[in-house]
Image 1 (cartoon, rainbow, N blue to C red):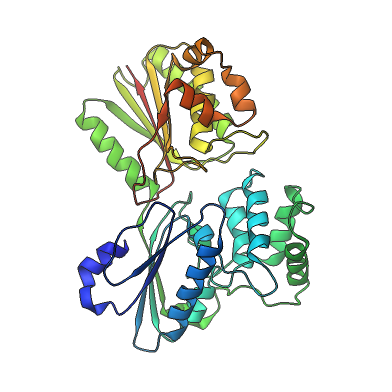
Image 2 (image 1 turned 90 degrees about the vertical axis):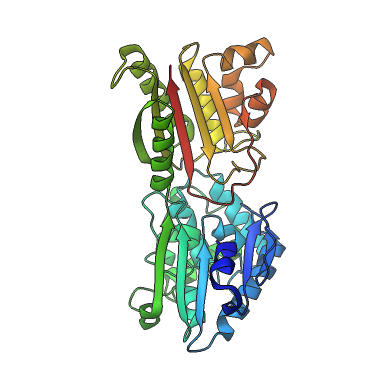
Length: 378
């Protein structure tokens, strides 16, 4: 996005900073590029966020700030509020990501721990004009959930965050400083994040320029050009990854048996973002977990292939975007002495697929519109 703005605007850009995850950098002419940690924030992200804060706060009336943002911004813009450390945010993020909480719930907490998120960047930018160009990686395209909404009014509260932490049993798993912040906020002792009534939001323009739905539409058009009878099932897949995958695979088996809703070859496409509750000590991501659970459910069905992949090319803390499975996947694992169910139980899908050769490794795509599942029925 930043490179495209350089091509369009050229010398009219007087400065800029972009923070991306490690391995996703491009060389730009007028904009500084910083690589930082994702999904767990690190010091490089903090330093980059400080530069963005400085740039925004120095803008004057008559200036226009273009804020290009996609999913991942919550981790890549990690400037803690006063009284919290980077370590506090890291521990809180790790606990949230392992809890099975939705991205909306995770980001509500992140907004209240940040000096830039939850509309606070928009507050800092005044009196300059501000236009945010946004790639959505959130089901429903909720603006305040995408990158935790740096330029968007926050509709959640400290009390909401406290209730969510209690619901997921995280009160004893997060730093005491974070818990005390939420308790003070719920009592009204510290200021809330900016709300929709703030007048400076009148000068902020938030525009979504890409979504999961647009990616699925493009996939559908390509599949049809290849001769597949194609349907988009949903762009709002959510829930526990292994449960959603099992139901999805059961549907595919039924479709394959009944040749319904159409004669093969069929292509069924879906997208969204599932969650994983970490129960074991394995390595993987939500797409790899989806694929492994789907492989177990599909069993030896011979005419179904399923791909589940992250649109940014990176699934969890791995170098894979996801995996591709079929009716031979579980059997090939057994021939190697691997029990697919055991690997799924300890969230170790990456190592299973690494052994069977079914990982989907494509490298950074330089975009991010959640996940895509493509199922082919021969």
